[in-house]
Length: 91
Image (cartoon, rainbow, N blue to C red; front, side, top):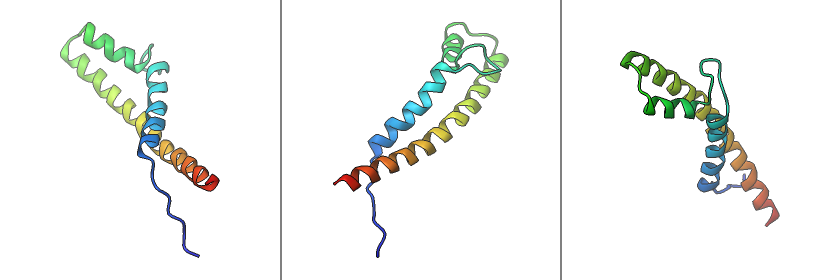
């Protein structure tokens, strides 16, 4: 018996991954910051500090963004696969 091929739903994958990324990016507070990372970025644009401190904060935000985005994309892919399989099984 040949394995069944499922069609990837890119829009669903993007929406799930985007939701999984934005929720911690907008709501969570981490040990390095007293506020969510998105708020830190906004404050940095509104009230710039010296260049060395700004670069340090941007480096931490980039690492934190990677730590949030990679699992969000992977988990989004898995959830998208489950939804597509369930949807195809109902047809």
